Image (cartoon, rainbow, N blue to C red; front, top):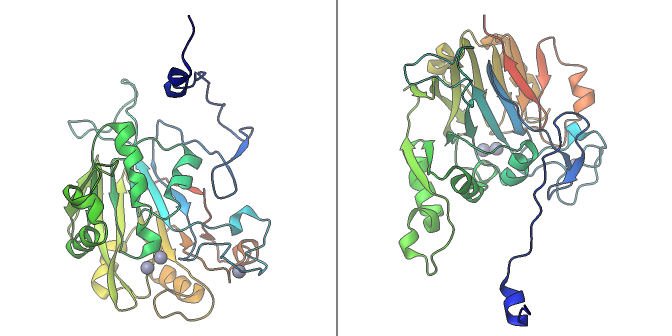
Length: 328
Ligand SMILES: [Zn+2]
Ligand SMILES: [Zn+2]
Ligand SMILES: [Zn+2]
């Protein structure tokens, strides 16, 4: 039967089913929008607390627009830094509070996103992250927030809204800044917007998420009070403290006995709202985690050069690095 020209234009193209390529180093690199980023699918079951660095760069990202310095033009992939987001994963607790055992098929791990960097889409696609259990915000700077619109794809895939954990003043700022998301009745067209449920949190008031205990930590980012997070799960503990220039005395007790500390290490020269590399190392000495990772680096830092000089147990993070916490 002949198909009219009009009908042809409105028919969807025939799609062919395809299998995902196998995981591992053989998986081909594929352009995802910002350059050649290798696919690095995540695996489960997850037996331990782990942190995946989705982005480790400062607010401008590395390479920076219009910069030809040796880091911005480096061929070392660890010198390419997207804006800061991390994914924290751990075994999901069953309804009775017990973590899954070998007898039952393991549940998919709990996956919590900290911050939504402007490159969130590329970061998530790179690791094929399909589901998250919530988003936690450290503060409301553009480099930590402006990927918020990409959360709508998780709504579509998971078919449910997403909890958004942030301090009350950050929730208020989100409502004012992203009116199209939080006051959709004012949108002229009904459109595809993220479905988010704001959940207020406060420093030093822990809460449980999917079997992990989260403690918001007060940090100072210049004069701006912001949050870091401590996570205790699967018998281990980590803390994520980005965008920090000072740690108030009352926060140190919450940083005791850490397997992994992630802390801001912007550059060598002084900055009013970030720790320098030396200041970060002083904080690591004082907090004494088993391992520490610097993040939020500017283009002053060439990965291979600094990594070789860092003390034992201290490393530079890079985009795509996964860190496991073994516990004690
Ligand atoms: Zn930042
Ligand atoms: Zn540069
Ligand atoms: Zn900031």
